[in-house]
Image 1 (cartoon, rainbow, N blue to C red):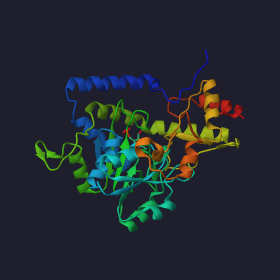
Image 2 (image 1 turned 180 degrees about the vertical axis):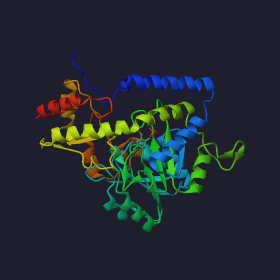
Image 3 (image 1 turned 90 degrees about the horizontal axis):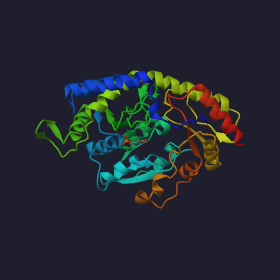
Image 4 (image 1 turned 90 degrees about the vertical axis):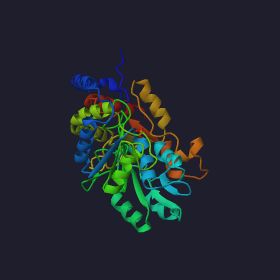
Length: 363
Ligand SMILES: Cc1ncc(COP(=O)(O)O)c(C=O)c1O
């Protein structure tokens, strides 16, 4: 039988991990607590330590985190928010959901928001910018924070893909006013369902976010504002507490596998390799190469049982409900060239080498 290399197959969790997760399920089932409880408190406390964040508010998912962040900063109708043209749709979706207008910014050749274009895009209605740490590579936050402060606009970091990435020892999500994380199952820290979190250094904002995620309640039946039910499930918090025990090991594995890719693909001059993957400000969520013949290369790999993905094939301003009519040449160009190779904690070194060998044969 042809041995296949999936892009990501979560059935491949180690047996021991599956047993611990089952035990965690039983423990929560026996306690009969399915909303809130000490699992949620423990998860938030573990995240505070991991991210070195004074405040962490767990929530239902990364998209809700973005929406809650915008609402906490009172961004809505008549306001504009700068977002990169290339991202997962949630980045713009949350802006539209609060009634504000996303102003798309072209990206640099690596897919990150192009900081040189910001001065031309900012206007009197601009209230915030949402930098996206795409593929786990952080936007240069020292530079962006300086710019945003000068312009007097908020920063909401879309750190959905960037848990474990740090710039000068500061975690993604902690340079801006609010940071938003996703624990979608395929993320570096993944739940067994949907989950997310918010980070902030501001006590008042933390309080506001927590109430917004819980029907606007300060405490039971004390509604301060109109909120949402955007709480994390106890089960997901419990599973994430288990997954956190694997986080450092899996991060190290990702770094090691990426290094093998870099060594074996170094001389392949018809692809562009991702930059800065060894640095602390890249968490290797995705290993994204670029190739002129992307679609044919994807097919070639698939014919040899190797599965890849594209993050993302259509830039947001060209997706029907978000259509802007403007041109974003760099984002558009790379959306046609990018290809995410398999990289996850369940792949072996030999499999990565096989991907490289098969890829090279495409020439
Ligand atoms: C860049 C980015 N932003 C936001 C999100 C939304 O997170 P979630 O899927 O948890 O709603 C994701 C997750 O896929 C993402 O990759």
